[in-house]
Length: 287
Image 1 (tube, rainbow, N blue to C red):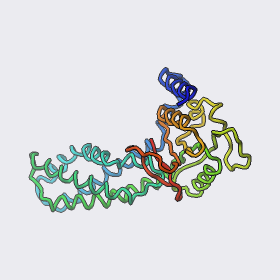
Image 2 (cartoon, rainbow, N blue to C red):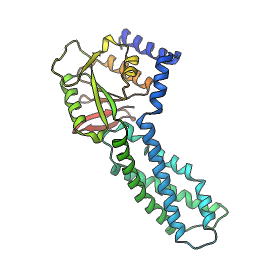
Image 3 (cartoon, one colour):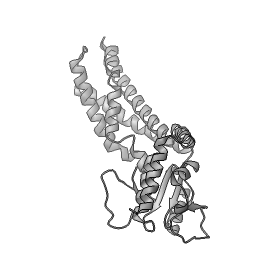
Image 4 (spheres, one colour):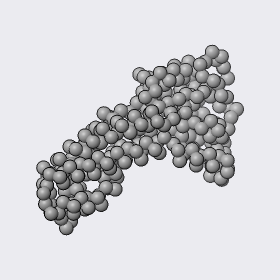
């Protein structure tokens, strides 16, 4: 990494940590209305609703005096259900992948529901209520899976149609980023709005459809991203230097901004990277 890039990254981090009032105020207001913040909570609310309805359906088919006891006892496990679902990435994967669909959740939902049902069986076994059979838990599991898929599809429809799209800044190879921007605009289901280009090289391309907002070497990236309220940065790895790429990644992480990289062949992939695509073009979801 060059000294100038390292200095820029360190300066940006110090600015964030030292409490520059304007930038901190913008980031606070920005994060409180961030679409991912809302989407995660709506997905969690949908899952909890699915679990509650499934348990109510199950209780409607057992005629015991302890039915309400079972319901009250099972309510104590609702936070644990959420932790199980979160451990399977059911609330974080949407933020990394723009092409994520509800059908992609089904394997993880199935695993999480099986784990939750087994835990519910053990919970009733040790609790002051009548124990249940696995056949009863199968009813809860099947209904929960069906309702979770329906509610998740509805939540994603609400997020796409009722919340503003993510503002995307594109960086790197002009022609490639322009093609990506065109594909993003033609597919509103991605929830992406390319707002402009931040040039990396000194060569300008005058006929781009997106406005050129500046050059990487000429801007304070932390303030630039905050001033333009950028939600996601899309970088073409073809043109940007490794040192500049590391600096951009560092500052995006400091600001809590997501980043996608169009990879070069044989790039190394870490465990936290999600493979994604924008209408057939492979990108990497990093944070």
